[in-house]
Length: 267
Ligand SMILES: [Zn+2]
Image 1 (cartoon, rainbow, N blue to C red):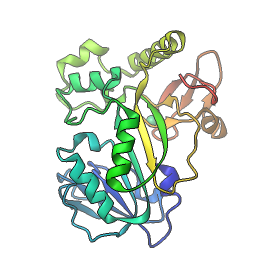
Image 2 (tube, rainbow, N blue to C red):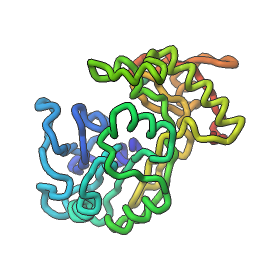
Image 3 (tube, protein in one colour):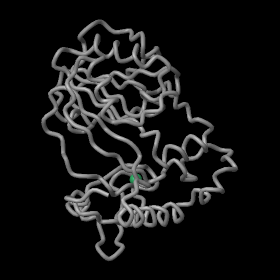
């Protein structure tokens, strides 16, 4: 989403649709004014937060230069109503970023099993059909789709709710060492058999977005879940090469195993 946030200028407005407790992105990642909306008050200290239904946004028409829906559309009971509202509040040339899980992946199945549904009301499993729906309902042309990988960070004990579900023990207990080993194992299986064990979902870009970084982001942090291109980690000098190397997450500082997928290569 950084491609969109970095394009916005002072005086622009960006809508964070379904911000959660901390916001989908830090406000200092853009020069624009960030307006956040959620259906529940998770964090009263989050600035510019409105509590509202995504299908009835409390904003006038054509008032945003961009919107970010980061892993939220799968939770909306009235998906088409929310997309119609996005169409209404976005300016004609506004940009839209949407990330959703692929309901057919192992990652999303584990997540829903562990959290008894996890609030995922809309099981998307076809990227093309989903992007066509969003483009049609929001009136924005589809610009690009990017594959998202998983680090299974939602299993990390540091991120799990307390008390932790007993089912966590059936998927390795959520320790960082077990998550790292799982990543390496799944990566090897995916490369050998062409499976999609590490795939989580997709990120879609709509509207006049023309600076999307097309590099895959396979190096996922087991603690914060952020994704990094291999070249970016090398540029920051936080990557340690080797057969199985390592990198320190630029976002949270956690030490991860480096899978070093070549940037021309998918999984
Ligand atoms: Zn991290």
